[in-house]
Length: 356
Ligand code: DAH
Image 1 (cartoon, helix red, strand yellow):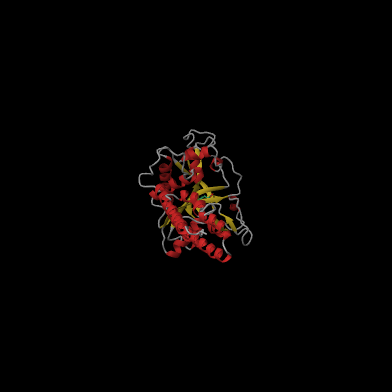
Image 2 (cartoon, helix red, strand yellow; image 1 turned 90 degrees about the vertical axis):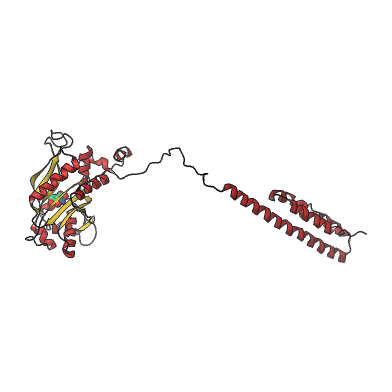
């Protein structure tokens, strides 16, 4: 009787040849059942081994297994080669080369943000003062009672404390730590630092956020911005103060806006004055915004009180100085004729967009 495995080697050779002839991984996968799977000659031959003697069957089975394994090896190797080639061809096709990426001619509807009107106002105020020879400094928004009041010649229980409705923080002894009610405490930090470092004189402006327990209305916000000015030098007089205020007013608001100083009281300056400018709404003719006076109050100023110099260790016989402080939000309101200050915090995009 013919051995069923007589042609095994030629079957293997044929399967190997067919495997290696495959040109794509897909073609090879489709041919798998015929080459090594259920419909392969190896499975058919397996079925014919039943007629052999047990010993013979065992060795024929092993031979068959081994032959099939050889084809399986070739199959796996060929499949790996075809798959790798197809993958790199795909990557090659997907790769972007110079020139594939061209700038879009379509205007995308993207818009960048920009600083708000208060920040822009602060920047222009700083620019004006830097142009006049001032430096710019900043101080903390959280202050102690000493910096915000006492060093500024406002001792505890002084009636002038009523000028500032204060937010106190729940830190330390009651009513000792607070949100600064004005930028004036930054004057104290600056003078202390200059005394320690021996860097007097001082010509500085100090912008920043302030807080008062006020109900917001058309002209007030509970969180608002001020810019403080301080000059400490030898031989400084009230005329220097008036000159700086007038120069600033013309530079920032324009040549047709004038400034004037009216007597006032602040504990940290002596003499003190209120600083007013021509109403920018009616240009001085009188309107509701300026209560028909033609003038708008911007802030306060005066000659640094000797008591303040003493608090920071500056000799008032050697040095004199002036200080001023006014609202940045108020400047923005006057410059841009914003009827209601609360628009600054409403976050209405139609309002904000006007100031890019
Ligand atoms: N700090 C004062 C306020 O907020 C404004 C002020 C007045 C500042 C007189 C000064 C000054 O520097 O000299 O009401």
